[in-house]
Image (cartoon, rainbow, N blue to C red; front, side, top):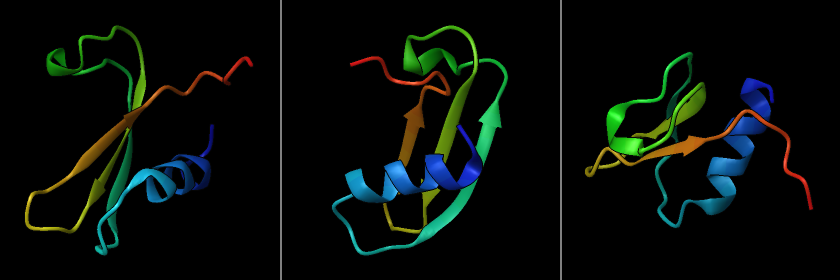
Length: 61
């Protein structure tokens, strides 16, 4: 998954009006996510400092 794809997924899921402030690829998932391995973190420039964590692995439907 690219930065643009991670940002796009997060924007579609986000229900606020703020823009994306940063998208970062993390090699190790933060403890609070309950996940292991790498993740994308997409941050929004809102009062709550909303962040989305996304798996870089392609979805299998």
